[in-house]
Length: 536
Ligand code: ASP
Image (cartoon, rainbow, N blue to C red; front, side, top):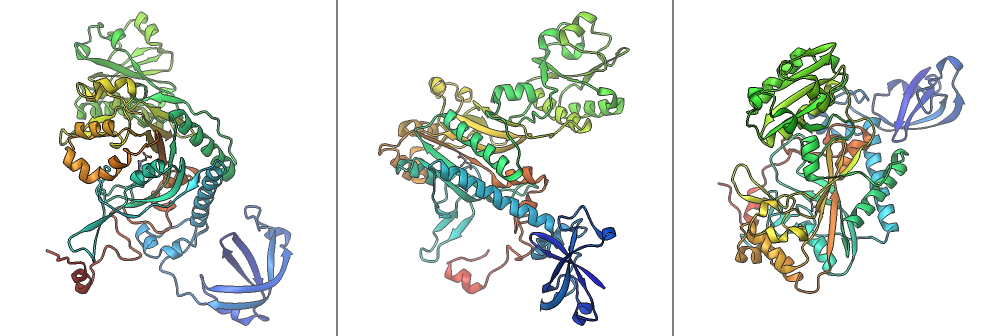
């Protein structure tokens, strides 16, 4: 008897073939494409496989047709894949035959389907917007497309439908969404792709609360539908300032505690020289800290020094007190800090930047103690600064994009202290990953023009680059706002995979190459000529 695992996208079925009756079964290769007929029968007791959905049965084949032969594949197509990612990407159509990959791609379909069901049932309209658009600074570098008909002129590939969705609000569609491809020519990074997909969404006559409600309901629906999990809504919220001072990041992982405590008042007068005169003294308390060894602490200390802080100072309460702070701290202070038996206090002093350092430290310890990422912890972060300073160029940039509306109560600071102005921006964070970002927009032309001015875009440039949006705002634009959750990130989290390339059917490498298509590639001189281009 010959046993064969026959695979289609729903799984595996065991075939039993008698080669005397069906001689061609003898010559079958892995990955051949066949069609069979036969009788489904219960497997003998000792051959049942409880781990397979079809493990109780097998197909006793009466007829076999070989539809197409396979050469020996360049790698073994198996679930526990051993082939290099390069080879997998080059022969992606074989890699995608693995049930693991099929499960992810099918889950992606189910997620997108759930999104459509939910939004359609709430009166949203799906509208496509152009991919070929005009080059418009939206944060990233554009991919450009030379025009054949207009020598020297270019289209740009849309970085997002941002401008169009705002125009759709001006056009009166009120509730729009689109599963939108976004293309950004950014520097390669392991978790980025030159093209990715967003659920792009925009609504008129809304406040932040309306956006939160739609998105919370949407995620609740997706989770129930796709992985049968009940999500608790509303999601917790933190202001940007709270996120930074408690977690040292604007995308906190709140799947575990260990928040940063501000100990400035408690510790500034303890006569410990490294703390003297420091703007901030902050720390984290690690419970169950037995497995944090002296060596770990020395490493944290080195890291802190590398970042330009004096170091990490520590105090362990176990039996007695030990650590670099033990001689400087008495019981009264221990009580104020709230350090309990078995806990370890790690402290850093410096300026506001220590929050970011302690935030990283908190995550490393979370990893070390295996505290991270159990369950799904959503969180809204809001009240972001409207602007930020680019550390390299010293230029003022939008924290989100230039269309975000300043908070009305901060508008009076726009000219004098722009960095103190908060924007009506909100991010949705899940287990430490930013999965959506959005804002209430400027629907008032003069306010939008003021923002451009602060960003150093002069009137002429603003008119040239954003003129069509500015003009549209002149014609009774409704107040509007929106958001754009990243589809890949959602699939990664739901499917439990770490690589963005695993949730895209045909991804590019981290170096923005398509190994399957062998792109980017040179083109024929004739094609360049048609496009009025010369390669220098
Ligand atoms: N267009 C924005 C982005 O791609 C999202 C939004 O503001 O709705 O991040």
